[in-house]
Image 1: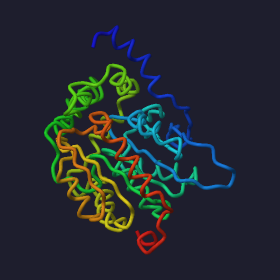
Image 2: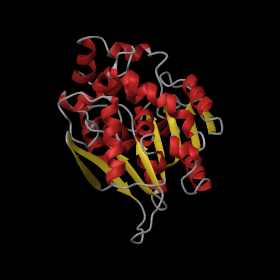
Image 3: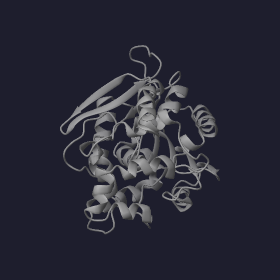
Image 4: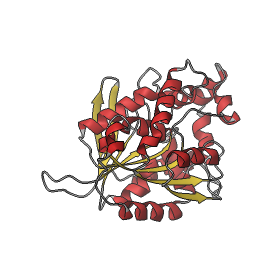
Length: 316
């Protein structure tokens, strides 16, 4: 894309994200989030869809699902601190920090009957937060993600973790963000220029890409890594959520969260509804939106019921 094309696309992407901004004030900065949905009479509770993004995306990733589902459901999509339109702290945050921030958002907004919708790092962050308050969780929708200790790290990720050079490439040159625009796809060769510009827009400088590098660096490789213990605790508790209605939609040509990651969720949640998309990559919602949106809509409508209050909810 030429510079002129990029500048033109950068003005157009805002039309693809027609949401009002909201802010949660945290100790480390302002967390930006979208809060869309129908008007609700005072005192009436309604179901909430909580969209949790991964790396190097932001709440823009959920734009189509939000617009599709907001006429019926409250739809909330935060940008993790350091990501999207949220403030960019000077320190590198860990998985537990993002979990704590998301849990604070859920508590401050007093969200109940929550459907967690997550992808990539959003799976670990979202499930980590909801496991702290399982009584608030009703349903789970996951796209290519993980919430357990990694059994492998793809070479493309390992290369981004090389001392000095990895950080220069990811945080300095934006290599990870630019590569994601193509490496996350399988059906498509490229994203629409306005969509690509939207993904890059929040990550346009060294300080603004700090969180992109932070997520890569935070992948644990040994038991004394702090995030190793966080992931181990989440993995151990996954079976406690088996009674929740769950939808797993997987791009089977994802080189990062490969089909064996899907198998691990299926083992924990044997009753989950599973859709394997044979020719789709990591960014399922960008690679096959026309397939995925109806699947999610049908799942949400068909499981439209109050959150469970049984043993699993009490002891998750």
